[in-house]
Image (cartoon, rainbow, N blue to C red; front, side, top):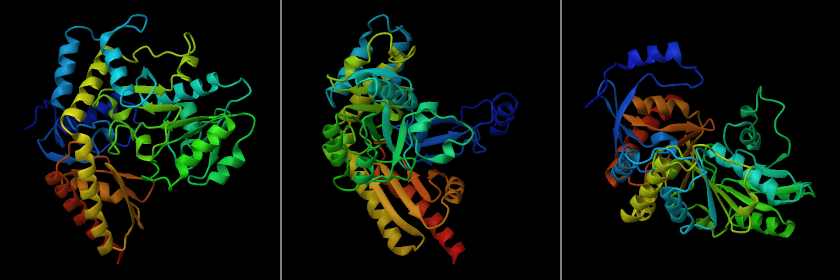
Length: 401
């Protein structure tokens, strides 16, 4: 099954010599993927329920996206944003007619957050610059984005950080109100905290943030880098709670695995990102936008919003049944195809054990087993993955006893 010309060990040796070792990597080299399956250089197949850290929202090598990339590459690969290009206009229309407002394109979630921060400050009076964010949130790795991330472990060694960010506990509206002052310009939150452990908002919390923003003339910014593009069962996460933000950031699954990010802003706010104040050289390039249009078409034409909810229900039922069996499972948190299984013990060992059994998953926030399966995952694949996770967690529970 492998198309590799080098072994995993040969590739690892090459990395050790030439690549900065800032990632903790597993000792295998992946060479080919199809759907939810991926193969290493030795031909071993893995079921991937965390493909591309959520970027591969249609799995590996989705046919429409592949065709769109091939056709677009034969015409235009890159055009600077001083010119008009059809794919960018088409992608903007596809996103905004399923959501709201106008779009600005960039290349990543962190870049989208940076642009959203600048837009919030540009749209409000000069004395208003502070943005309230939330504990256990995650907004990216650039300096402003990491400052917006209210997790001290990501700040270590990076000071001084960017001024103007204040942190509130999630689901605490009183704490948010206490932070608002005459210098506050916005509130930034993930509708569902992903890296923080698949944490869901309490009933009324997002609505309460909208009310606070309206009362104090603040901008409400939703970081939908993970929750966008159908991940929660609707096109965008805000639609789950019927709370529309003023600004929304998108990335990860936006273009079916191709690097792409976007800011969506209301018609009122969007013009404040005026010429000369922000840009992205590769943002909105023809390749990414063609892939994005194909991603939207695939989700719609293949009924993947409906499949997302059906598979979500299946994951929930499997893990809630396992929770009733295993005391090490503290809580099961599911929203669409964002799945978190919170353990009473460290979750990292589960990743290695699952990999040994042919399954790729993620561990986050010390104790959470996290899954971000593609929207086109099948019931058989859900069952296969849950069977392996159940086997692994049973073994881990026995070790605790």
